[in-house]
Length: 244
Image 1 (cartoon, one colour):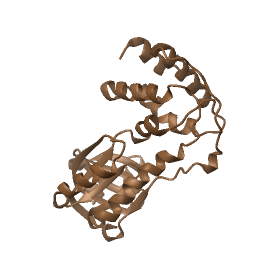
Image 2 (cartoon, rainbow, N blue to C red):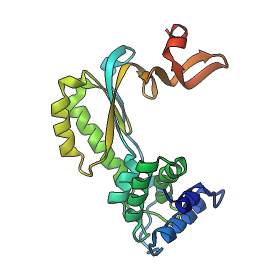
Image 3 (cartoon, helix red, strand yellow):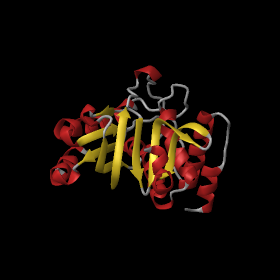
């Protein structure tokens, strides 16, 4: 990524996140050569935007250690969907965002990621100078995908959280699943798949899952050298006896 563009993302233009987003976007437009033109559209209230993501736990697999699971995670689904379906008051915003997401996929710059992650919250905020009138469609589209997977593959789905799906015995449904995903993934959201040695879900947002030789803990209390903690990556070899 060009140094000038990197500098734009690394700069903090304001302590106010909406102002920082506005000024960053303006500087990005200047760098990319887009005309920064705001056109009034009807704002929607913050409460009217459907902001609830899908979180679902198959009770059949709750409180049980499940081995050899597969995780599918959509990559940057919110900015990818925003770049394709959001109707904003800023001309060329979707095209600009598409270019920035492509840059991030090549460079993985943390400051670019931070900018991308702040977009959804900003454009749905009624106080933002850059806003969208249909931002609720982003979460609705993602929920549609997840709900369809639950209906068709319920016996193989362990857990769903926003943009990730945990499967058991994935090879049994692999071909059928990919065919179904091609049908429901209307905006060609990119995704990646990883095999995990095991997982344990006790409730929504409360789980342990193997992650490249470590145990990722989310929500569940555990004990460490610093006392009681929530959330961690623990090396399996060094700490398995303390956990189990």
